[in-house]
Image 1 (cartoon, rainbow, N blue to C red):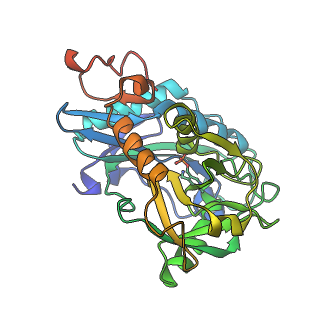
Image 2 (image 1 turned 30 degrees about the vertical axis):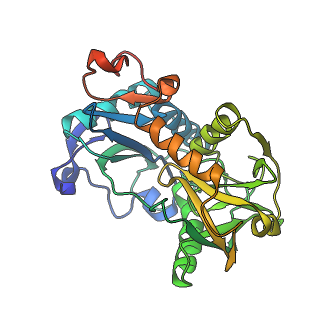
Image 3 (image 1 turned 90 degrees about the vertical axis):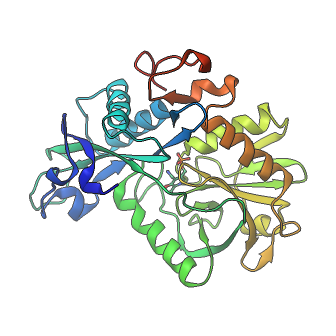
Length: 323
Ligand code: PMP
């Protein structure tokens, strides 16, 4: 499928991708004054159903990010969810997908500020290929780039301009032969990956950096914290983490919309645990896959079916309620 074939949502209307242009002087393009989301849709072949994962939570986060930029979209979170579902149907997407909503300062004018600049809002839904193959385990490195400090740019808002930091770290890591970068805070604590949150398992405890350590408050992170306690009976701790705790962990894994749960088997050339994917990580990979595919009834509250629902699945129609 070519991008030009897609129907997108742009400023209150459905339009062709190639007719939805932004100008060279757009404020968001020049100054990074935008915010966005990444939402995954999982295709369940036996059910012939596409499930969007934690749809409502993503749009709630988008609107919170927009607020930081002094943007108040006219659409409510519920309306944005409905547009995302409509795009899946209009584009007849029956495969794994990615949805990219973006709100950005769109005025074509020179001048750095937030106030009094009009915005655009668009949603693109497109076929998606997996970011990492989680079955093999990743090799990561601590980046020399630090995670942005909340007092420089709000780390918990998913702002477009902030991603230059992620891009610098990711490309350095890949150019140095690793799969992914881990960024520290300015104080030297572990923050997160370039586009993922990070967890360790040590002596049966699951530990992840707290939201006050400049992380993006990940929706997958929240999911995994809940699953560790509820499904695996593990004790979970949100606390600052030192770099050397990573090296000494029994298991390390990343979480994020794009990567799902991705085990890390080596950091800075040091094997994590025995250098193989650990038991907790692999249990979470399986659990997360089953939940996102809508297979676990007790977690249907996190998935939104997009296509007309057969009575066999027992799931409500997405037009009635959106997650
Ligand atoms: N941190 C950063 C910097 C990210 O870009 C992402 C991906 N959105 C995450 C963490 C993980 O967040 P989520 O689980 O909501 O995708």
